[in-house]
Length: 137
Image 1 (cartoon, helix red, strand yellow):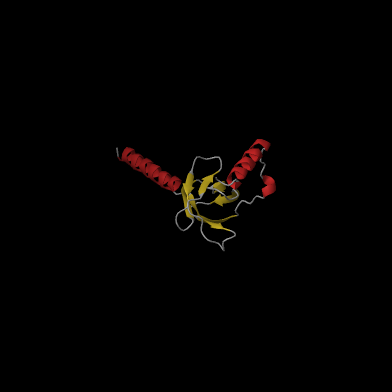
Image 2: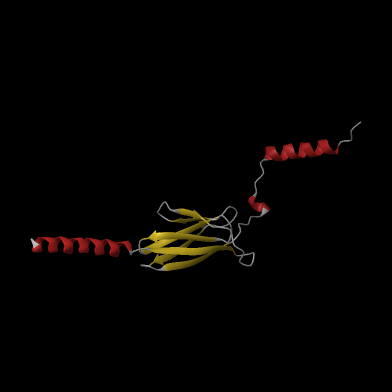
């Protein structure tokens, strides 16, 4: 009888320690997203996601973000913000560690040569301009 209860206690302890050890196998990613051209000003509400996973967060008022309870391994962060170039950052997560990341976004640029105005639209613009130039009697 004592032997049976000792086996139950030993089994219970193994289950307890096993679950504690497996629960500790996670890490997190913390980071900041800044504007490259504006002297490192934080970018508010940028979209940060983990490529291949459905986890997405937004940066806060200080440009900070966090992913927690991640399994150790390699991840790719995808950082997006309207009007800026999307970037991807490869990083690693370790047991019980915080991986720190800084993402610098550059504003998108375009020139007028990138803009294509159709012939019909150009005629409409010209016609409206001529109407504005006519004197009113």
